[in-house]
Length: 78
Image (cartoon, rainbow, N blue to C red):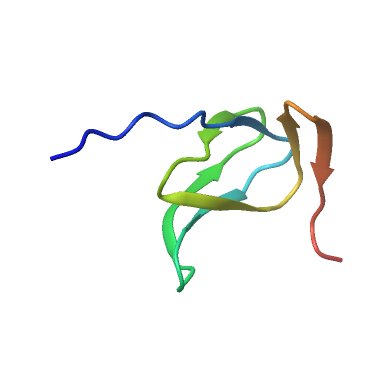
């Protein structure tokens, strides 16, 4: 059996600005599916990683998202 080389996975940091921020991990492949979710309260921080299983991360609520490319803020739906 061939051993896979670990891929260079990117990390992001998500800091909840308000209570109830939802962070949802989405799978890779032909059918994108939810595979993990977390709920953050104000001030909580989650460090997330893109992997061979996680192709996207969806964030709902007021949060600061820090990546290697800079910082962005998500907002509540109005």
